[in-house]
Each structure stands twice: as structure tokens, then as C-alpha cells.
Length: 312
Image 1: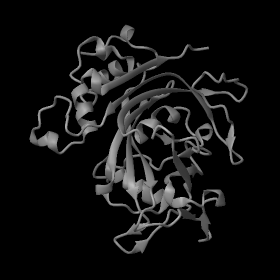
Image 2 (image 1 turned 45 degrees about the horizontal axis):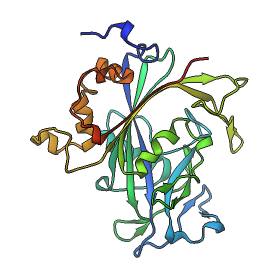
Image 3 (image 1 turned 90 degrees about the vertical axis):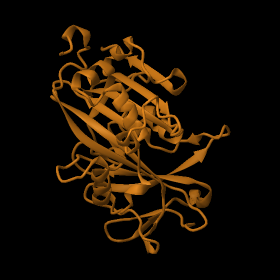
Image 4 (image 1 turned 180 degrees about the vertical axis):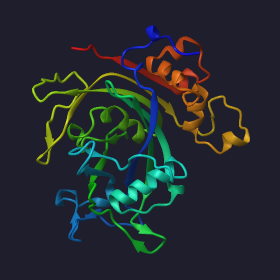
């Protein structure tokens, strides 16, 4: 039965179809077998090493991001990814293909996990972007046991490594990441990756004019360019973000049938919330109306944030 329009916010009622995308984040932690400081290869084939201030490489983990060189998101730092193509076996295969095309890296699918699912909507756009978020947490420069590979510049992306420190409480310090030059929603869900959580998120974007002034309290772009490249500015007037403890021993009250054993914990959560069942269920979740009834996901394993910012 279609969802009544009066039950939906104007942010969620207009899109009519989903388009699948992927996003890959690669993390490198030097160890006994791979002690090399991270580097990237530029277009000339020269090696670009991390800054000398970061010489204590083996005490850190490193996150690989890319500076987008063209197309949607040009001028922003981001993970690696793009549209899932018709010849991709599944979204993970699409993520691996995009990573290779944008950074030159070849990694085994067994080292990749899905950690999040994001949905993005835009005014007057008929498409809802559904993004599968993957991580490779234990990447090494050694491929197939002997070949050394480092990320390289491509027409699409200029990769760079960012150090990840450790706070006194043992949590990961993300202060070195260029959030001011990333999408404005990134700083909300990135920490969940490094806390070991799974997450689901919806973000509605509206474009800002160059003359728009942005309050520091708003979820919006404050910068207008990165490294001399200007980019379109956006704000997020509404979003819904949930994170889940990744407890593989607790499959969120879902019976372990044969199909369930083959799916990830995140996919099981999505199946239990019926977000893939039809678009109306996803719209309800975006509006949080789904939680008018009891959910099988226990409160101890659920942290929910529903946030609306007033439109100006």
C-alpha cells in the first residue's frame, strides 16, 4: 500500500528510483612483514612519500583518500567508488573495480567488509543514491605474496595517505582528516567505522549559492575550494543516522537459515528493517515512522539519531 504523502517530509517523498553506488576506504597499518612508510605514485611515476613530520610510520595506521579530479564531487577528498555497473556481479565487485580504476590497487574480496549503507537525496531529483560502504582494514602493499603495489594518480583521483592517531581513551583520532574539504556528512559517520560499528544513514542535500553564508552549527560546506579547485557547495537540512554494534555472535534475532549465513550482519539488519523490500519502507525509515512499532533490534545494540535542521 503506498505511503500517504502527508506522512512524509518533503525531503523524502519526491524520489522514484534507487541507483546503486559504492565507496571503499583502505586502511594501512605497518607491521612486522610490511614496515614501509606509505607512499603514492604520481603521473610521472615518481614516489610521493608522507611528510617528514610523520616519520614514525610504524606507530600509526593510515587512511587512503583521493582528491576527486572530475565529475560529481570534483575538488573534494573522498573514498574510492562510483556507480555499480550492469556487468558487476555484486556491489562488492563494483567497489573493487572502482578502487582499481581510481587508484591502481588490486585487493582480494576476502579482505573487504561492508560496514555501512547510505542513501542520498537531492531536491527535484528522481534518483535516490544508495551507497554501499566497504572497508579494507588490513591492506598491505604486498600483493600475491611478493608484488609491491602502492596507489597511483589516475585521471579520476589523486590518492594521499592520512595518519590516524590514538586518543588517550584508546579511540582513533581523526583530526588529521580534511573534513572541511570532504562532503559535509562525512564527519558524522566516519567515526563509526573506526569504532567498529555498522551504520545506516540518509542525508538530504540542497545546493548553496556562492553568496550563501553558513553558520558553524549547520551541517554544510564552509569552504568553496580545495587545492585551488572550486566545488559546488551543499548543506544537509535533514538526516537520519543509526549505528549498530557489530556483534557477529548476535545476529539481531534473525534465524540462521542458509540464506542468512551467506549475508553480512549489516545486510541482515537491513533485511530485518525491510529497507530493501520496497521504496515505501525506506521512505518511512527516513522519516523514522518505522519506529512507531516495536523493532526486533534490541536497544542495547541500537544507537539512533534523528535530526532535522530548520530550513532558512
